[in-house]
Image (cartoon, rainbow, N blue to C red; front, side):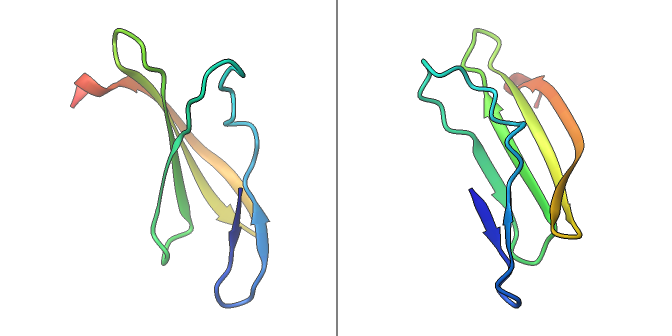
Length: 78
């Protein structure tokens, strides 16, 4: 997956370090973004009994995504 700057046409590839889903699972992570923001949030649900998830917060800087936070929790936390 990549992000394309609508003004410059520059392509920035997303980092692959958040793709830690085992091959046998057909699970697609959720991606949240705004067109006017440099922040990308990728959330991976684990589909377990506690409804746990991992959220990765990336900031695009100088043509690269930098991981600024990794949050683990469960959906019942509110």
